[in-house]
Image (cartoon, rainbow, N blue to C red; front, side):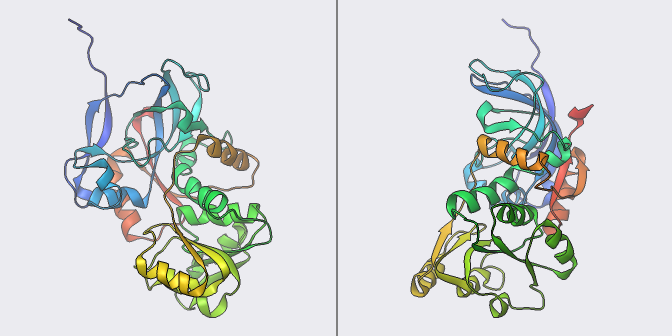
Length: 327
C-alpha cells in the first residue's frame, strides 16, 4: 500500500450556485498531468464574465454540472511537470493559456493540469498578471475576427463594448489587420480607445449608433439584445452580405429572421482553446503592437470581490487574480 501523501493546493471553490459569497478558498487535491499534459504552477488567473455567469448558474454551468467546482479558464504560470509525450514544453517554461474551455479547467487555483498544446509560451515583455488577462478575451476577439469573419484590410468593423476585455483586444486586432475600426463606449474611454487604434468612437449613452454609422462589414457584438436590442439595431448598419458575430448570447430566431430579411448574415460564437493563436498573439504583444489593459489585481482570497467588481462596474480591460504560488 502506498504511503505517499496526496499533495494539496489552495483553490477557490464553490459548493452551490449563487452570488459572489459562495466563493471560498480551501485546500483541494493538486492535479497531476496525464500523458500529453503539463502541470502549470499558476501565478495569475484572469477573471471573465463567463466566470460569474457560471457561478450564478448560467454561463457554462450546463457544461460543468452541479457544484462543487473550481472556476477559471485564464492562467499564466510556469510548467512544473510534464506528462509522457510532451515535446513542445519543458519544466521551467513560462506559459499562458485557456485550457479545457468550456469544460472545467480550475484556473482559480495554485496548479492546473491540461494538454500541453492548449498552452503557449507567454509574452516575455509582460508579467504573469498581464499575461493572465489575455487568453480568453484575446482568443475570443482573434477567432471572431480572423476565423469567423475572415476580416480583411480595408473593411469596416464595429466593436460594441469596446473598452472591455474582449473589446479592447478586438479594436487592436482589427486595426492590426488593416480595418477601419468603429467602437462604442462611454465617453470616458474614448481617448484611450483611439490610442489603441479606433478610428471612430461613439458614446452609446448619448448617441444611437445606427444613426451615425453605415456601411459596416463586420459587427463584433459583445452586448446582445438583452441591452436595448443592440444586436437587432446592429443589423441596420451592415452592408448587404455583412456579418454580425453574436458573442454573448448567440443568435435568436428573431435575430436570424431579421438578418435574412435585410440580406445580412449573423453567426453565433464560442471561443476554443488555441495554442498556436496564443503564440501569434504573444508575438504581437512583444512587438508592442497589442497592449493589455488590467484594471485591478486581487489576491486569491478576494475572488468574491473580483466577481462583484466585474458584475457591478464597467471595467476598463480585465480583472485578474494573483495566486499564492508566486512565492
